[in-house]
Length: 282
Image (cartoon, rainbow, N blue to C red; front, side, top):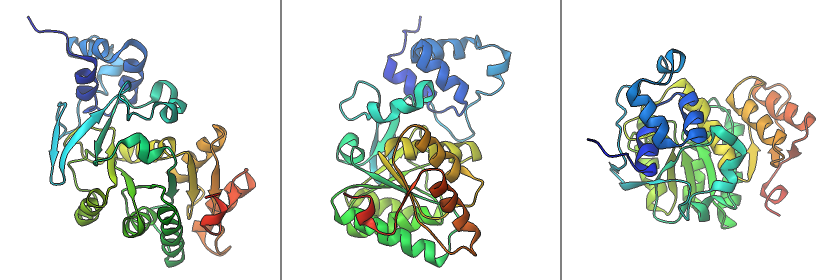
């Protein structure tokens, strides 16, 4: 007779699954009960059709990476940023896989997220690097998505001048994009963090990339948008932050650039203007 898994173990096992409906269920009825329903096939046909673990994902409560052992941080742990993540309601993460030596809560409580599209102009990359340097030199953590474009420019600069926190759309033991291995190593080596809500081995997917953007702005008390088109994850998440009352700054850009249309629209909708770190670090 198998024993009932602990809440932590149930949460970690469920982190191998992508279905947001399963995450919501676990937050409502408890992770152990949701896992029991999953194993019994008792979720109902509509939900069961969407809860197969992604290929390569591992049901586990431990992970070893090239940068060291990752830990699974859950509600009730001292370093779990519960107040920040509460804005997601029943869609909040069941837990966070974390790679980094210092407590996660210390890193995120005064962090600034710098975000934008995966396509970036030379102007956008330069601005992202400058703003990330300003934040890092102030002693705060710079948070960004592990992705091409604005994310990569932000994380490289933050790691040069201070601490970075990278939010991943994969398991923390997966290097993606593939040439970002040295950057991921440098982030941890210099006192930063890699964070994901997905379990070991989880590969990237479009849904996980979209969720990564949501998690990034939930973890950071403030968000700065550098470049973005009118349609995409960046705008959706920035608008969500505004709706929640979180402060959002947007960087003006050339009116001839499509990647300026997003920040300019956010300024119309209530975001504040950011032209340098002094605008949002006071």
